[in-house]
Image 1: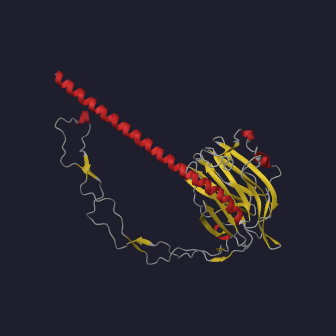
Image 2: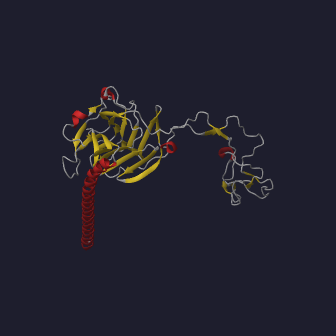
Image 3: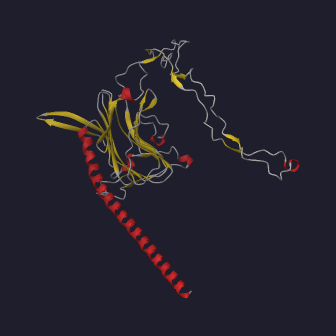
Length: 397
């Protein structure tokens, strides 16, 4: 499980990087992972199995961890030797394949200090990083949450969701660097690169609005005003309806029996609608008032927001309306070459899946065309039968 990569130069061995955890879900994976019992008492715990999905290149190589049931909570985790990413680049990478649309649920992983009992792993379990796809209905995003001083902090703006295409594997890579920069790649393409201190609200703001600063009483913040010179025309008609001038009381109308006669109302042809005074720029407008900014006494800078003293477990804690998600080729390392090697596994599988998907789409299109042609032929036959019946009826007459 634990590997150290070395590059040998002459007689000196130089450490180039370390792999802290890797998993391809080969033989014995059940012994390396612990299924959570967090939701067991509620009867909503899902189960896991080893599976390849409908498209695979090599059955043993492409076998991953699959969520089985629908509408279940899925929890599973694995421990590894404790390490800190302080002063080091951290790379987290894994594959996720939705064999069917999840509809509502996640495909993300969590990493952090291991709980005393991995069977208790679940939503309340503290973690350092949560990373991966999440969706519910039309709301879709790639989650990236960092824990800082006990708070789980979401990115200010969502990362794009690219877990589309049933039966298609997607590769997720997160890189966290000692300069507090973060990079996210999906399918080996960069979707984000930025700074942890800028794009996550991990720190208090450097400046705040001065609570002692008050808006002056004579401050005018209305940009527009009614034109004092604008007056409603005297001939402006605001009545939508009027008495029909052409109507007259019927000759047989009896006021005693029928009540007092009233002429019907009709639409007023002179009606001009509601009158509104014209709006003009307000010459006294001073703009939107804002309190002056002052230094925030609560602000404390931290050049190590990226750093965590302990990582010792990785896991999936998910709710899924539709199961059948397959996870595979997980690696936690500080060695880009090791992560790239795992990426090669995804490249081979993805190429096959794209080929199979194209074949499936072509077959579906062909079947749809054949069905449409058959329906058209049937409709044409029905029309011919109707014409023949009409001809026979005419001859009999």
